[in-house]
Image (cartoon, rainbow, N blue to C red; front, side, top):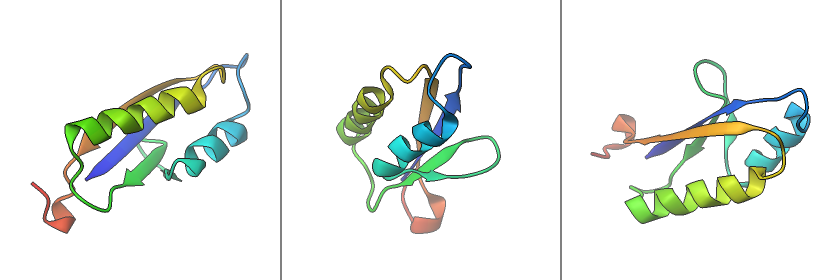
Length: 81
């Protein structure tokens, strides 16, 4: 499973470097392209686990002046459904 994060920054919010440091601490790696970061699950995540990760992201980014979206999908390369 893979969870992608897309972040919209505000000029009134925290610096992007601070936001990326925060999501790195959660296990996301910055990436280029359509998404800003990627979280590689070490297994097929349950819905509850994906929601818990979303909760952790929200708690971590709260007060930073950013808006984010998450997308969790199966990783076909790892044989997940």
